[in-house]
Length: 198
Image (cartoon, rainbow, N blue to C red; front, side):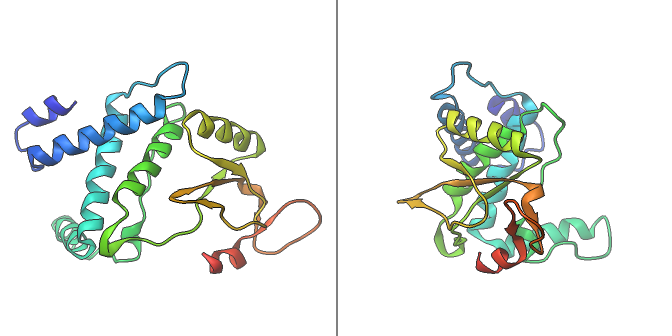
């Protein structure tokens, strides 16, 4: 992919940057496959999703204001209004089909964020919450996190993050356990109250 992108006409990313991003993606993939019996290989769209994240996080943590201005200047050519503000600049969403590799892309995104989250624009955080569709998916995600060498635990909203030096345990929780108000019995998380603590 690196050589194909390097040879494309109209490329706007410097060769040194593209090589660094490609090396990073290779490093994440080796880390992902270290404990797996069947290694994962990247399809082109998975590689491009990771490359986009590399570029975005690199630009964001270097200079978020410059990135904001460049995005809005680009968008104004299409529509006469500003689309982005500093608050939503910190959000990224992927739209990928079922079975397209979202789970391991997400795990690699975690490593990407940890790699770039430094300097004067560093984002301080003390919890990472992975919300799943149901309890079976929670179990499946925990098993997959373990295969990738990432610490995870099923979480009911009652414990704060456990931190081991630079590593954090990913809290995995099914969406039906999130609520604004506690009703009945069972395990639920008071989302609005907890959100204030983050």
